[in-house]
Length: 160
Image (cartoon, rainbow, N blue to C red):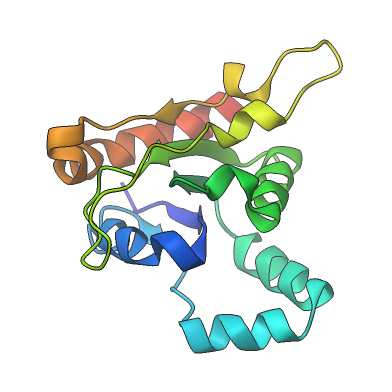
C-alpha cells in the first residue's frame, strides 16, 4: 500500500520539536515542514496569505492529523484547518503529543480536545465522531510509530 499523504496541523511555536519527531517516523508521507523563517514570512503577509498557504498545502492530502499539544485547541489556524478538513471530506484525527519529550522543554501538559469546539446543529460535538488518540505516556513515540498508519486509514475510511 502506498504511503498516505497527510497534512499535520499543530501549534508551531510550542510543539514544532515534538512534531518533527513524529514526522521523522516516516510511516506516512506528509507535507514538507515549513521553517520558522518561512512561517514568519507567511504570517507577516497577513491572514489571507496564511489561509492561501493552508489551502494549497492541504489540497491534495487525504487526511489531516491534528497533533495536540497543551495549547493546540485554542489556535485559530488549527481551528480553521479542522473545519476545512471536515468540510472537504478529508480523513481527520487527533493525536495527543504532550508525552513526546521535546529536547528544549521536556514533556508538557495534556491539552484539551480540539474537536470539542465544533458543535453540530443537533448539539453533538465533532469529538463524538473524530477520534483523538492518547498514546501510552511511557511509550508515546513507539505507540504513535506502531499505530499512526492504522489511525490514518481508519480516519479516511470513516469519511467515505
